[in-house]
Length: 128
Image 1 (cartoon, rainbow, N blue to C red):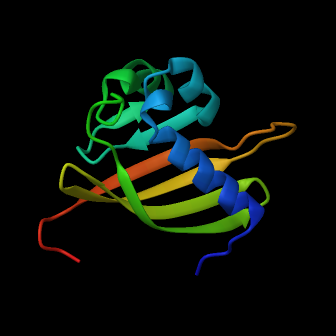
Image 2 (image 1 turned 135 degrees about the horizontal axis):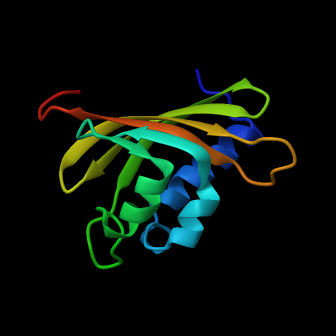
C-alpha cells in the first residue's frame, strides 16, 4: 500500500533525479543524492559502495543525453519511520526490465533526502 506523504513524494523526486542524464553525468549532483553510507546491489549482482558509484555513474547507462534513458513505472512508497522511506518501482532500459527497491533517509538537520540503499533485480523476458 502506498502512502503518498510528502516524504514519499520527495524520495520519488530524488529517485527520478538520479535517472536524469544531466544528474548521472555530474559527480557533484550525484553526491547530493547519495547517502555517504550508500550501498547498491545492481541488476548484475555487483555490490557497489558510495565511492564506487560516484566514480562510475557518469559512464553508466542512462548518463548520456543522447543515449538510452531509464523509463520508470509503478512507483510505490511507504514512510517506514521518521526520516526513512522505502520505494519500489520498475524500470525499462533498452527493452530490459528490472524491479527496484530503494531506501531513502533524511538525517538530523539535512534538507534533502538521500538514497541509502538500492537493489535492482532483472525481470526475465516474458514475465509479468
